[in-house]
Amino acid sequence: MIALGVGLSVLSSTVIAGPAQAVTVTLVPLAPVVATAQEVARFWLADDAANLRNATPYTLRTVAGGERLSTEIVPDGPPQSVPPFEAENPVAGDLPATSGKVFFIGGDGRPHWCTGTSVQSQYRNLVATAGHCMLDTEAPAGGLGKWVFVPAYSEGTAPFGLYVGKQGIAHPDFDDIRDYDRDYAFVTVYNGVVLSSPDVLTNLGRLCDNVGCQGLAVNQPLPPTADVFGYPAGTHPDGTAPYTGQTLERSTGATFAVKATGLPADRLVGVDSPFTGEGSLGSAWMTGYANDTRTGYLNGLTISVADTDGDHRYDTGISPYFDTELFLVYRDAAHRWTGSITRIPG
Figure 1: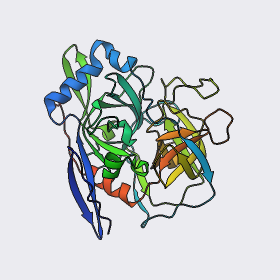
Figure 2: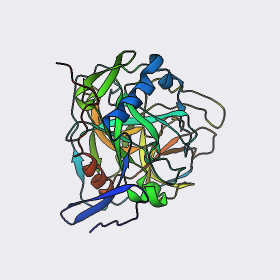
Figure 3: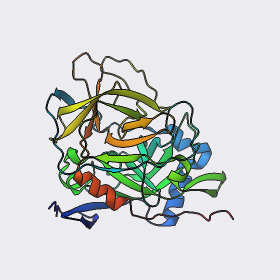
Figure 4: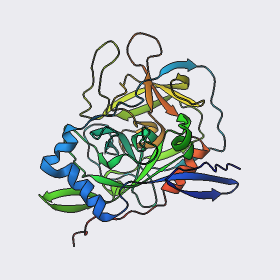
């Protein structure tokens, strides 16, 4: 039996169980009441979304030392998968509207962003990202402030609206002891909104109904390749800056086990990817991705990047291995309802 009874500081906890399985999760209130969520939405959307446009990429834990390994990662349980949900999400080319930016206020009091992905759930309201793009790891406890998700963000626009985070769900070993094998988080979000006049929020409906949801795959053998979707920004060590972070980018590369220095963890996965770390934290690693439906199975999340060959250019994205404990955290998050922060028209 998996049983994690780790203390949760000032955050609350819940225990979920299945056949011979139980895990304690960390529950992080982000905007637990409608009035707070409305204030958060207006903060980001006011003045023609100036705070979205002026946010900078999150720079915490963007780079680690990395060594590629030839060993396999052994699953800790049977393979599990959740199918994706396809919606009408007209985005140019083969890029999915399920990927977007998560915005928040960092410990420095300034607006920042990472990458996030909508994932299938009972209420079609769930976003996956890196754990340190939801939890404020520079503070004793608590979530990052004013947390929102903007799917398909592009050049300062929010084509499918803005979704305020209600509650974050994380693994207690990341919250308590900073185990980066558990650096992942799921966030339940309210229905999307736009600001239809200077002070009026208009309801757009549920996240996955608008953009679709990716599936989830855990305890799988490392796939030959993975497609990575994210918003990289910043520079390589050699000073080159190939990405702006203003549009969604895609890379495809081989996967492998990796040993990282500077990240306390023992079961990390790498992928060949030229993404820089700033902005790409939380990027989705997809297996079985289909260009026609723009859906597949989430099987990794970028938590850092590395230059493994010493040529002063990042070549590897790093993710926790998706195992049983991740699946149990996801399963808890996938059954949490949110609703709307404003009246649904009609």
